[in-house]
Length: 463
Ligand SMILES: Nc1ncnc2c1ncn2[C@@H]1O[C@H](COP(=O)(O)OP(=O)(O)OP(=O)(O)O)[C@@H](O)[C@H]1O
Ligand SMILES: [Mg+2]
Image (tube, rainbow, N blue to C red; front, side, top):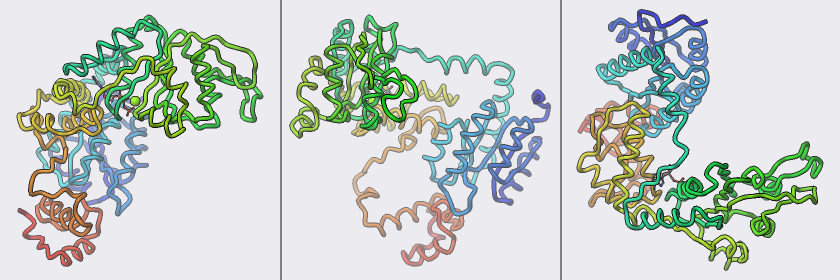
């Protein structure tokens, strides 16, 4: 049994560099914390299993010469499985924002970039310790329940005329049992549309079973969808019920339908038409009471013309087609969506952020959003994590705005891009070559060689 929280807060610090451990130990000890230090992921796990800590402050990089943070990320996943009430603050190299974001997704409560600012580090540790004590006193259960049981009915925000039309169509066709084909670009909201259709249908009490056709190998497609009986093929050790039967009484949502192998399309068509399936290896017929929905970001007419998709199957599924427009064609939806995501992520990451400043709103409105709503959601998540104050600034969004006169990295020749990256890294590290080298994943001497080659003076890198 672990003991209850100790009167003196205990902080575990993990880093493979002895000097980092030593300076953190001194800093935190000076603030009245009890400190334990470890130098490897294995030692972190051992320490956490052995005693209770109020906070873990850990580096993400252990094997020398890597800056990927993968070891630290794996460790986070294991720590979450072990004790997800332990607040973890990760330390990342300058500029490795994506790694920090991934760490937060895996359960880290906060992050700090190296070289750290003492005041900021102490503020973060203090608030995490307080939070962990409050949570361990029982508040946690309550918030956990709220997170684990999200409303099953999806929320579709629709402010633009285009999206209102979509919602209107969904409402009108939902009560019928007609098959519906949902089309639209990646991340535009096809799955949300399918879930809404189900939620508004007479089958809403039944299941909605989502099957991604792109994720099923041709050889097992039939058995996954229709099931099989024991002995039907070598690996069929027992009877298996297919997705059509699992979805009975509800809705079967076949995502990425363009990926259904041509050899399987006739069987799929027959099942949709007759609402009867045969398990592989059996001639017995099972009746399935299923509403069929499909989605794709491909143009199925082109697929038909190219001989990759059966025309009769297309005609069977596209009686009603709902096209979800790309986000760039529904500008009025951007800010309401952004505010909704902001609310969700601010709550999840416990940050008091109330909105976007004017420049950030302009960026949101003018960015072309090639990844649609999903990209917007990720950009807001990142911004919530990056924001230092109570509003999100344009920079926090991390969207590369190609401003006139400033070349985009991917448009530069390789050596120009390298030169630019080195220059930026030095600037961020205040001209400190060792730190810049670490951030770039280079040894000091390798960076010096490049500085010489490009004629960059490190001292001038400060500004
Ligand atoms: N109208 C909307 N209101 C609220 N959230 C939305 C809306 N549209 C999309 N989202 C959110 O955006 C993300 C992407 O949506 P979804 O998964 O439905 O897209 P998709 O078209 O199925 O993407 P893909 O083609 O990549 O499978 C999800 O997190 C979803 O909740
Ligand atoms: Mg989808």
